Length: 215
Ligand SMILES: Nc1ncnc2c1ncn2[C@@H]1O[C@H](COP(=O)(O)OP(=O)(O)OP(=O)(O)O)[C@@H](O)[C@H]1O
Ligand SMILES: O=P(O)(O)OC[C@H]1O[C@H](OP(=O)(O)OP(=O)(O)O)[C@H](O)[C@@H]1O
Image (cartoon, rainbow, N blue to C red; front, side):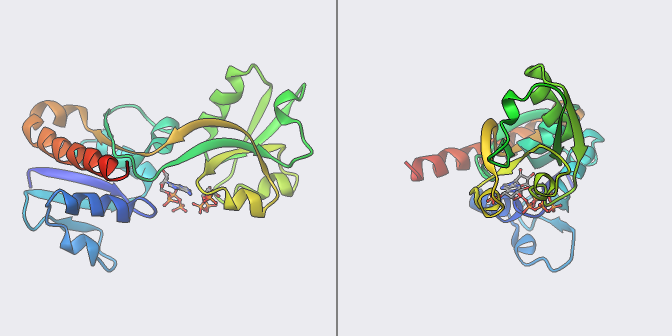
């Protein structure tokens, strides 16, 4: 296979596969996949594999995948040994700071505790504010952590805002927007430049087409 592409499974999967289909790629097997994790394109010389978001960075960094599709949240939290080439403008959400309504978290003097799945992002945010922060790593259902008294607030992803609302938390600040990005292995960008550029151009065309359709 000339190119390998690591796709983040889960929330980004369906939209990414739809974009590849719009590009005219042969991804029928990815649409009807069962429990399989590796797929060959039926039209192009491309192999796809489905991985967890953090592993997408790892496979691309190690050159096992030439390209990867992964959320900006994972990029901001994880390693940097790849090129970030294209915003696919899917999987849109944002990083927010939230807490219970009665806590004036961002004006609190002294030590605060923050629960999050994204310790590096959270630390950078509060350090930039010069606040004395302790980060507590949580693996899921982050909204529970201030309710149960584990921490004073959270840094997490918000999409519709439903999870925060239904758990009585309020947004105190937006940290930054998030969307899915295409990342490229550094060596692949040199050694397989033409093939990599062809995929990037196809996807970029779809991004523009989708943006025009939504205007
Ligand atoms: N509401 C949302 N919550 C979380 N991620 C979202 C949301 N909307 C879009 N995303 C994007 O989808 C990516 C994959 O999220 P997903 O929840 O499928 O996997 P995960 O973060 O590895 O969690 P899990 O352990 O539940 O599988 C995220 O990294 C983010 O870029
Ligand atoms: O604003 P909303 O549309 O409600 O979406 C945001 C929620 O989705 C994510 O959690 P996820 O569903 O991935 O589960 P998790 O708690 O296991 O990470 C995120 O961590 C929020 O909890």
